[in-house]
Structure formats: structure tokens, C-alpha cells
Image 1 (tube, rainbow over the protein chains, first blue to last red):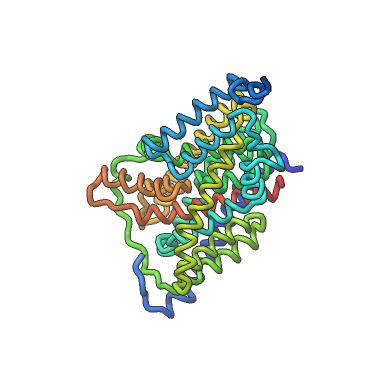
Image 2: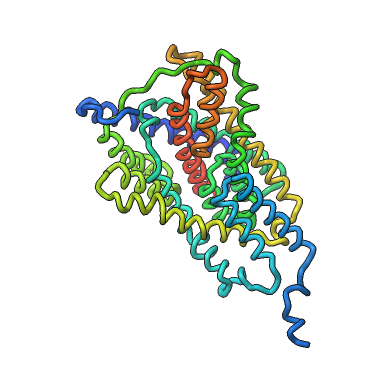
Amino acid sequence: METAVGIFVNGITGVFIGMAVLYLAMKLIELVISTRDEPEETE
Amino acid sequence: MAIFEHMGVLAVTPGMIVMWLISVTLMYLAIQKRYEPLLLLPIGFGILMANLPLTNLMVPGEGLFWRFYHYGVQWEVIPPVIFLGLGALTDFGPLLSQPRLIFLGAAAQAGVYLTFFAASASGFTLDEAAAIGIIGGADGPTTIFLTAKLAPHLLGACAVAAYSYMALVPIIQPPIMRLLTTENERKIKMKKGRRISAREKLFFPVVASLVIILLVPASAPLIAMFMLGNLFRESKVVERLTETAQNSLLNIVTIFLGLSVGATMNAGNFLRPEVIFIFFLGLVAFIIGTATGVILAKVFNLFTSDKINPLVGGAGVSAVPMAARVAQKMGMEADKKNHLLMFAMGPNIAGVIGTVIAAGIFLTLLG
């Protein structure tokens, strides 16, 4: 059974790791796809 | 006469009358003030009906509203279907054009975990504390999804708190954002991000689903449906499905979600001192989430020449798109030519994903 402190630490760490990996995935998409495409839509 | 014994009017309790007043207040706020009317109106009416005596609406196995609640919420159907609609409505372009803004959405989740910790220290069980903390994500369906699994007896209080604070974003956030930023910081004009191709937008929901679900499998019901809705939208080949997910399907499930949540709020469940404390903690979570988003943007600015306007950090709490609109409004108050809406949409959308990940982590550790 996790303690409150354990969940707190795991939770914040987990969210930042998740978002960091998603950030890298976005950069990968940018690297692999955007260099091959002409921009079709603006932000 | 026997008929009098079966009349509800004789079975009304003082607690029910208090709940009627709460119900009328929510319906008033929905109709007159337009505070989250799509949810607060059915919730308000659900409360009224659930607190009429002898109706059996919430009797397990036979009540009509119980069936909506059981098969819709307890079976985890409605919140993911709502996420399908939200995904079909979401444009990830602003986030893809400035990926670094995703961290502002992560920072806002600090409010969730700090409040979880505070609630736990205040005597709530870990499951209850998680349900209270997630209010700070300002994401109604995720709050309902998590609370129904971990602390169903708090469902009404947590859902109403989440939707109330989402409606009150334009009132709660500006003082905090003003307090944490200088006039010059609010005037910062951000550089436009790069252009995003249609193909990038098409790949994103697939890649994001893989990444998030592989890391936090418990978030799968919400993330899978969110990204499927977005894939419908970006594929541009299933316009009928996209349109259905965005409109009719979303509207249908919203009716049943609101009614189900309202119906869980009977006097015995709701009229307890802890509920007031839950509302207070939910507000604290929301305030911390706003503050941490703003503060992280300021920290970023210490290390980069490409400055971020810290106001967009406040949009890291979900509450799409109200929190982004608050950033836009405050940016224009500081400088009429400072349009922050599209920049703020990045952390705003990231906040939705962050809250789902936070809920998934709670489920992983507690479920």
C-alpha cells in the first residue's frame, strides 16, 4: 500500500515524465514529418 | 386512508428541503448566470428529483436514475464517450507549434497532488483525497471518472465542485495571475510558433495514444477515446463520425452524465461538514494549479531568450477554453495588441492530457 507521500512523489514525477516523453514524441513528429511536408495549415 | 400513507409530501425531511434549495441555486446559476449550463442544469434537476421522497429513482436495480448512473458512470461509459467528443473538438495545432508549452500543463497538476496531500493529512482516506485533488485539474469528466472508481460517495460533491470552479475560472484566476506577474511580464509578446502540417496533426493522436498508454495504462479509457475523436477530426475522411462525436453524441451523454451525478446527491450523502471542506480543498487545488503554471513560465523565462508570457501558464489547468480566454483577456488589458489566445490553448490542451495522466497514476497506485 502506497503512503500519501509516496503517491505525491510518484504522482508529480509521473506527470512530468509523461509530459516529457510526449514532448519528445512531438519533437520526433516535427523532425520526421514536418521536414517532408509543406505546411498546409497555420497554427 | 391508505392513499395518504403513500403520498410523498408526508415523507419530506428537512434535509430534502435543503437539497431542493441547492438544486434551485444550481439551476438558477445555469439559467440566469450561464455557469456551465450544459452540466449544472441537468445536475440541478437531478438533485431535485433524487430528493423527492418515495420515488425509488435511485434504488439499486430498479430506479431509472440508478440505471443511468450504474450503466453510464459506474460502468465507465459516459466519461470516455465525452472524451471522444472533446477529442473531436480539439485542435492540437497550438500545442504542436510550441511543444515546450506542454510543461505548463504538467506544472498545473502540482495543484492536484498538493491538494491530495493536504486532504490526506486532513483525515480523508487516500482514495477520497485523490478524488478531491483531481478537482484541481478543472476537468469535469476526469473528476467524475476517477471519483466514481475511488470514492463514489463523494461523486456529487467532487463533480459539482469541479464544474463550479470551471465556471468560475474568469473570477478565480485573474487575481492570482495578477499577483504573480508584473505589468511588463503581462505585456510580453510571444513569437509565433512554426506552421503545422495536416499530416503532423494526423499522426499526433496515434503517437500520443501509444506514448501515454504505454506509460500509464490506467489512463487508457480516457486517452484512447480522446485521441480517437481527434483522429476522426484530423483524418478528414469520417466527417459524419466527427460531427456526431462533436455534437449529438456529446450532447446525449451530457444529459445522462448530469442527471446521474445530480441523482447521487441525496441529503444523507451531501449534507455533511466534509463536503464544505471538499469545496474548499477543490478551490485550493485550483488556485495552486493556476499559480504553478504561471510560476513555471517565469522560471522558463530565466533560461530562454524566447520569452513566454507567464499568463499562458495559468491556462495549464484544463477548463478548455475558458482558462485560455482569461489569459487572452489579461494580455489585452496589459497591451491591446497582445493576443495570447492561441498560445494559451497549448498549455490548456496539455492540461487536459496532464489531468488524465494524473488520474491514471492515482488509479495505478490506489485502484
